[in-house]
Length: 333
Image 1 (cartoon, helix red, strand yellow):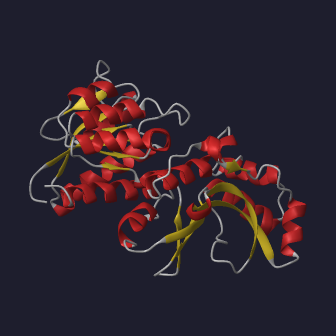
Image 2 (cartoon, rainbow, N blue to C red; image 1 turned 45 degrees about the vertical axis):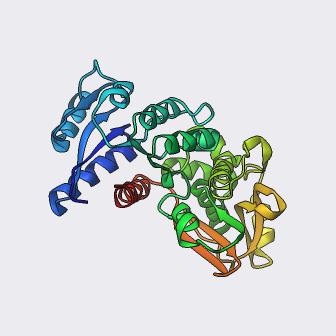
Image 3 (cartoon, one colour; image 1 turned 90 degrees about the vertical axis):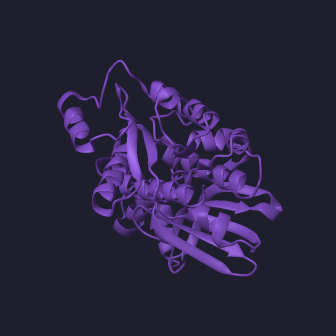
């Protein structure tokens, strides 16, 4: 990794900011090869062939709300800026997967690698995007779309090579897990726990994608299509959320030393792809607390493997993106 690697970052929210500050720190402290050659936010964009001064850029944004030139936009960065890797973290509608899908297509067609944290493009258009990446001999990486800091995609793609994956079960949404934890531990009602999750930033003002199971189901779709070679959509899945779970149900489960968790399931041999609440013994490895995620993989050779970690958050998502960047550099001439 001695040659210079130019990186463009689309989106300067919590995730994009985490990526640029981490890359800047690595260059300053570790003499890394990465330079940030372009950045965009929702109002402006900035291009610098020899690298952006991140501190000055963030100071400017704090002052006027813009990272750069208001005459430039994200599409200009994607189409015309100099970069080897595009980090795509734009605000994107998960249902339409835009504008992220168009940005990814443009970058891949230019012969640039892409790392994205947006679930929509991978859930809806993975086959098309992966074919475009192959056509132009570049990489499309998306570790940040599933389970936050848990490197589940890398584990399934690389570390378990030679194993047959019989099933995958997991807690894939930290908001739901937090709500169910608080209902179980403190006896809160669903609405009380939801309001607490909102105040802590775990739940959005409109939490329906989380509590109705859609977010977890989108991650199941990504895993099924990218790892198991399926071609399913949300319409093919059975989805039940947690919005109808009562504190009485949790108390009943507690009377049997059990609790309730929202579990995503993939059983490829039986074509089972679903998200639903499960009653689990409190000693079960998937019973984790707070906003944690947990995933168990059932294999023929390695047996059952369980991974636990933070499933959301800017630093956790940054970790996944940086890991993908390093993977691309290490495995690309």
